[in-house]
Image (cartoon, rainbow, N blue to C red; front, side, top):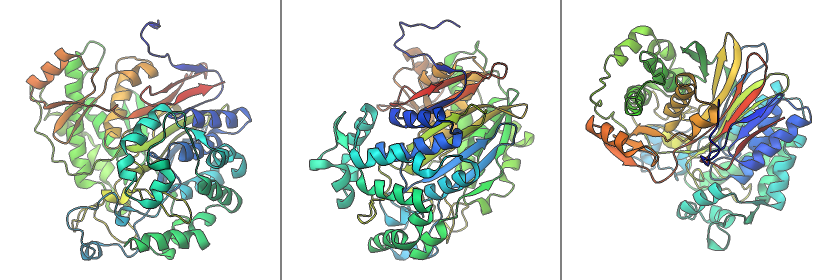
Length: 530
């Protein structure tokens, strides 16, 4: 395959033994360092996410949530649910008494579920890692304590959300030095996070959820009107747990996702619908975008109506992915006319980091960590330095809804790691960031690779589209004639002014074992290996 070196694009990364791909260069470097020292894929992922929790605080942190898919060489894919639960005292009457009627605002303390990321890291480390946490966190602790340079995409997003994070005096003190967002290359630090990481490395997740730190975080949220207690944090220590992944066939590959409460089911449903159509290289671009948009509308309508806490979604995957349901949904798609916009009342959210790694032994991990909105809830505990996510804003205040808030429930999650397998062997850990876009983005990425034969970087760099909120969002790179064709079919188009999502993936050649990595040019990161 030839590459156009005049295109201003970059080719994919090739390596024979091990590789990591993240959306931040310092995170990729930290993970690669661990791999080069003999650490495995899980070690590398934990080192990388710890760095990104410091150096990309808009997108992720120890106050967020986490999901992972792990494919040990020769073993079955395992799914880890590291999403947090609502406080034990949280229910619809309690929130209505607090003045909430229709939705939970992203900056409300009620949007904060007990963070699940550190619990997930603990579970992954205990079951799958090989190196001690103090080694894995070394780079992150150094950056948090001594400072890190702000990268270009992080700086752009930071400036765009300065007004939002400025609404919390404690967060503003940390993230808006001298009252403004940092510039590209400016040194920033988070010394309190360095302390938390050291404590977690020394004493495990208990140092975060229990004792003084758990009590402090609960007290701060309670002071803002939250329903959180020290007992809620105490119980959150072991909330992350292994679950059975869900999967579906696409073009002869098995695509694995975490089950609900994540939206991985929506990604599989889109792929199952698309499998009823020929999306090969001969298909016109307008037709391709139209099919993706229509499949996404159908899948997201079912997602919003049906996905919530895992206890309320038993058997849902088997039903939605069954042939009769998929055939019926695919039959609703007309090539000449767009479906009516799906009812859309989910809150917007887009801030997440995704990374993946493959080690020299052939173990692969697909890993995602999120604080939901830009700077999460913006609520920062001044005693611990923890910035809390806003994942609870996804809960519904509707009695009987699968995603209704309730004591110890988990909300519907948009963050979804993916794993592609062939004949029971890992073929590609992959993921797409971007809030709601993730399920549609995963389907588009896989279709580009498996239907069109694109290499990973090319599939990632192509202009993106997304049927969202009653409109078809398109990146500026979509050609004008294609836009006109789509508009003629009834799509209401909007050209976005910010890049749509981000992605990473590592493809494993089944014959040579060589690795090909891609990292989205919309972000600062890269794929590196050896």
